[in-house]
Length: 365
Image: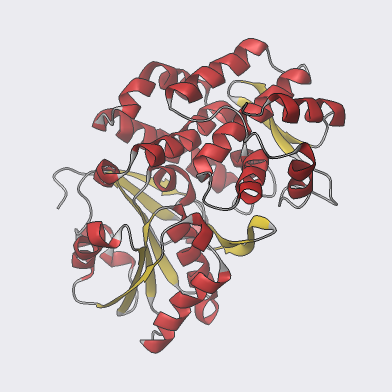
């Protein structure tokens, strides 16, 4: 049970508004989630890694409801339509109705796949996000983007479907392995890079504490990241404009994930390399200084993240995958590029030659 009140933010979307509760030891406490269950049936969707750690504790928060569970395999490679269908098999076999609530207990893959199932089951049912990784707590659990991957592109099949609430229990980060923690920090860095220069500076001063899992530093990083995301989502729920800035590093990063095979690179690792590539291209276009690129590189290296793409992904392969990215328009690639630390734009105005130079330069030896 929680020992102190969590920090609560609100994602302001009118009738679709919802709270984000951030704090430690919140799992199992019904006061944060039970009011968001509007029927009698709850389906907890988790994976084989998280279930032994947190499933029973989470079930306690839904006492008095009919609680069923579905446990999926763990990994980005399982974020597909075939695994997604296992959720419907469970819902239908247990005769879940239109007033049921799905609960996503896990990282970004579980959140995305469960949210998409909730958006689709009987044309839309409620769901609750309980993210257990840093990446999911600061990014994928907030904002209503749901979906699955296709062999030809990441997150190409999905829907916007907002949760009823997000419960970010920072104590779950204690069981996160070091690689996953670093992957989550990539998305934290993103907020500073695109819109919050003061937060970027804070990260430069406190990265060692984050890597060491200092509870106060982690709680602040989650809170500030969620504040940034909530502001962007409230202004542009369906990504018609500024929300696309949240894809900083993602065009290159998604190409790395798809090109190397889902799961070979963690999402945050690919985003880190992608942010470096986008900053390198921004520098080549004359928009930012080399010193800005160096600041980002140093910060990502402190977080034990890659600062270049894989050695065996060709420029041609990057271009082929990026041309079907969701931000592409009529086959024209669009990037989130930097005007400064804390100031980014979405643009298709770049030199193809300079892009080729970036793809050649930002490659691991």
